[in-house]
Image (cartoon, one colour):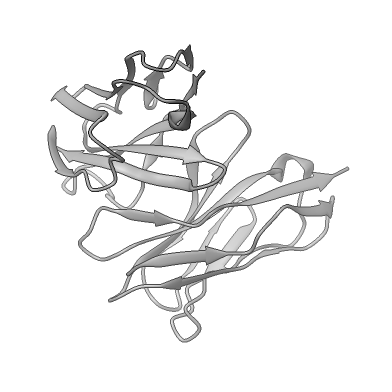
Length: 112
Length: 117
């Protein structure tokens, strides 16, 4: 079946540090891949997405590249800010389906 | 646009009581999803609707849970009777119809934090 595995948190970084949150997936077919972010007390919101192999999704300085050969979609940001502190969810949705499978989430703390 | 609206934001009830959670999706969205989030199990899809019709309820934990969507602008998730293990944050999300936008993206409400004592 479909599944998403992401690195356990929490991840604690200092402001302006480089961020990587690993995400790998298992899926049949050619899924779309997503990163959602959840700020304290709020619902999830889409951060970026990629719909086919080698696509790069980007938003707000975050990037992730759809790597079919390694079944990965790692999230990166070159310089994090305190305001990036949140929980990040990797997710996939198979073509033609509407069920989105979410990873367990990775909590990020950024210290000033 | 007001986004997805959920009520109440917080609910505290006693075991055995009926709980009703409410959701108003974004206008024009044809898909509505109910999720449950807990520390132990993460984010779980409970049920989703398309054009007010339940499509997949395989994630509903047991018969104590039921969901309805009487019209395009309103859905409820009911738990009867409630149990302490139902304590969680319940999210509603909606997605546009294919003809009007990308169905890839789900728009989440702020959630209802349910505590069953």
